[in-house]
Image (cartoon, rainbow, N blue to C red; front, side, top):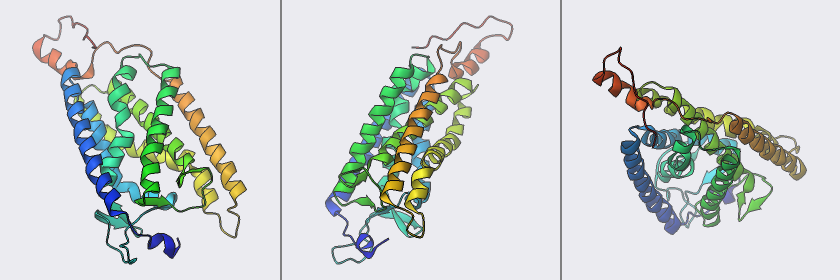
Length: 286
């Protein structure tokens, strides 16, 4: 990493915008998640949000792999300008990384989680969601990298206003992967406590997608002895994007095609109010 990157002044105005605006959006998402949870009698939506927020503590691993640097310098080049709560590998972590994770990765469970749960989302719909998530991720990060809040300093190819397009594709893929796997867990658990496993599902899908599918790009960026050429990075980028499309196609093949007979959240309540030998009515999924 060059001194030019490390000493690049942080845009304090846009840092404030990212901090306050993102946390306001998260509060709105939490309210929506609580209301949806009460309506559907499940903590799924709230737990999905919390799982994304907690996982942001592992962001430094992502930063090192993908050459991401959060600006921390004042106008004179000295460090300490960022509103951060910790640093790792020499990279400061702004407090808005947690809110950013929620916005980028937990929105999909809110607007398509129930549709997947009820078997009402097909292949075409999943690919449309994938595209929408890529666009949202790209818009979010194009602003951040274009206004002097942070940067991807590695030798990426295919940038949009300083933002590597492959990152948006990987993030969109991770979001779809997390959402589908989380809903499959939701359909299988017998109690709401089982949904706490989403705190494990998120990092597994996050690093599985970014470090697994993104491995060709990561390696191509960091080859030694002059082997990291634009042509090789471009080939690795195409490969990772192709793998992303393949993964989304694979996920579309395991989407539920019918609702479960009983909502997991209602099972315990039914057992408390009815005898074991009585016939259990099917829950209405609405």
